[in-house]
Amino acid sequence: MSVTSRLQNQPFFYGWVIVVVGAILTFLGTGFYSYSRGVFLPSLAEELADGSRFQIAMGFSVAAVTTALLAPFVGRILDRGSPKKIIMIGIGVVGVSYLLLAGTSTLWQFYIVVGIGMGIGMTCMGNLAWHRTIISWFDHWRGRAIALGVLGASLAGVAMPPLVTNLVEWIGWRYTFVLFAATTVVTLVPLVIIFLKDRPQEIGEIRDGHRYVEANPKEQTAEASEERVWIWQELIRLPAFWSIAIMFGSMGCVYSATMLHLFGHVEDIGLPGSDAAYVLSVTALFAALGKPVVGWMADAFGSRLTIWTALVSQGIALTVLAYADSFLMAAAGGCLYGFGYSGMSPLRTFALSVTVGNRSFANANGVLRIVELPLVLAASPLAGFIHDTTGSYQLAFLILAGLMAASCVGPFLIRAGGARERARLSDVKTAA
Image (tube, rainbow, N blue to C red; front, side):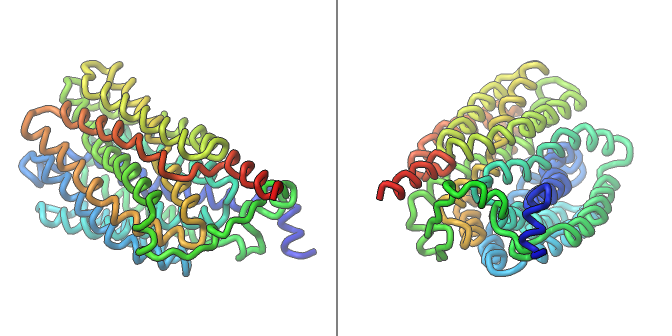
């Protein structure tokens, strides 16, 4: 029996194993990094920066610069080579960075470790690499596949805030970083080595799987754009590319600022740290619940309607958070914001892959990081500066809400993609 025949007789498509690997990568990678840093922020500010949250936030902005500068180069490597090898490098760098963070005693050391070490590590093991892998495995199911892959980060968001809050109280923030290092390396190295396959051709498969493609011949509408090779000069002349950059750069900067400062904001309105941790957890819970919904919406209706849903939800939620004065109000804002940003990562990948295709996806994704950088760079330090100046995050959250409202223009300039657009293209092809 041939390899193809054996794969067709398997009860599942191996691409879903890749999705599970991606989910675990996001849980231990993006989830640890993003959802815990707000909990660490007060301790880091007090010990390393004389209480200045702005100065600590600047360290994470330096990491964003490092990521953006590296992303185009890493993206080209990912399109031509092995994402698996890049991810392994990232795991090693992140593990070492956590250990170095545990020994940090000055602000400049913190900037070097977070800004350079974590910036490099997260570029290599983060969504730039494994999104490239998932796009190689999925076409018609790309929305749901990406959404389920990033589900790990949201599940980490549910678990990490209360867990890290307790760990910092029990063993201190330094030993918590040591624990992060050990967990990341010991879990991810064997997982990636054994289960991650860069492309379906490695095991005789095709995108979406032989079984699905043969069972749904009417859905197969080959597009030249899927195999087109883009260079950066062409990308920056593409209106859809700039629309994606503005929309998701805005969402990214809002996410970065909110995840870093929401814990402190909830404490500032008079609630204990345990309540602040639970607000972060319910935010992540609704992000986890929203991801399958967003993935289904993208595959069924395309990116435009789904992106508008995400932007409006985030804008309303940020306004609620700005005026929150109780646990219930903060939790309600967190739930709505979680649902809104559940679509940030999968919709960004969906919209970009529909625009530039499969062949140059990672390269385009890398260039996109550069374009998004000014927005991502500004938000967290600005929110920290507003807090240091006014003693409150209220104005910061209102500014972020306004940014979401302005971004609602963006979906008009991009392709929708999804089943409806494929059906339309198929009807046009049949009529011709």
